[in-house]
Image (tube, rainbow, N blue to C red; front, side, top):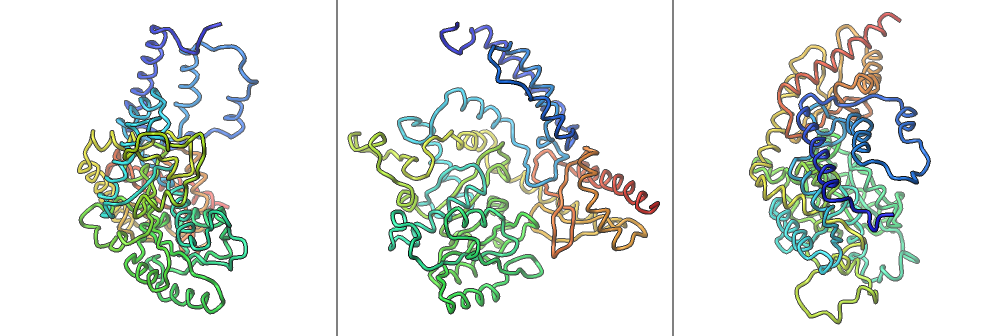
Length: 486
């Protein structure tokens, strides 16, 4: 029996060399990476269907298995043929950062458990506020992604807004319902958050949008007034800084004014589009985001980070501590020398936290934010290129207009009836998944099913966009032929 789980220096060197070779192989073929590898679920499950391993396995042989079963079958998030959801492809220096971070195994919860990592996270918070023009006094915390960032922002909102009721101790018992407002296009994480926070989705008001899929301000104002008359307490507005369906950006200045008028909290969901507000030509679109009480951001989108990392920003560190601090004897800092140490466990829910900010810090240092902004701009330009190609084609139809990197369209073919067009587009999603060359998903706009292409990947090019349309057209034509022959 070994005295530890460590390998010998030579064994570890061999393992690391083989690991490095596997990583380099992934990047060497990234431009040719398929969007998806189609295997039946039962087959994938069978690869890992085995009893608990009791004996050791040779690590080099294990890496061979990992290559075969995991790396070679992975969904093509790295490459240029991924258009589904919001997958940004990561970056190489963050691959290195995550490896180094796991090596030193810091717990970014108390300063003395990860001094450098704590200061790095504080610095990333400050840099993030600078990127989007938020207050330099902002407090913030790294979380798993946009959903967790919204949950965090709304947790702080609830606890600070209702501090007079000491909600941290008393809970919601005996309080009359309070209401949250967002548009029908707002991400579903808002629904999940109000449910988890005890507010309840019955108190979430999803307000209709205008023709640009932005929240209708008149309808919002009317809904708030109706709720006040009915005895509810309007509590929070969730504004969109780029919706996940179309990239729509609400009028955040107007939302801030409405929130102030009614004494409400303004949370901005910038998980998809918040960081691209750093581009000068889009600044005016995001006017008012700096007025938010809390902001949700997602770094594995526009900062091209590997999963997982999001961020919640609030106006200062004090509101985080007021929301999350709980005295515990084993975490007591009263005997420590008084310094400016910041304890993240006093400013967030988690006590066990990996150092997510490290890869962002390394990315910004390695590439510089100017180069990252250039990649953002390239993605926007490629989206405009896709829109142009769709508009000028005879067999596609553009269904949305966005300032960001989402294009919604559908295949209309030649001579297809309205019913056939609907059916072809619905059947395209599973057919394209089986085909595997590109990976794209759909959504509904005004009740109509459309294809939704998200273009956030610094490895894409105009050739990638042309290839997407060629593949969709090829698969759609085959589906259309089957429909016509039936």
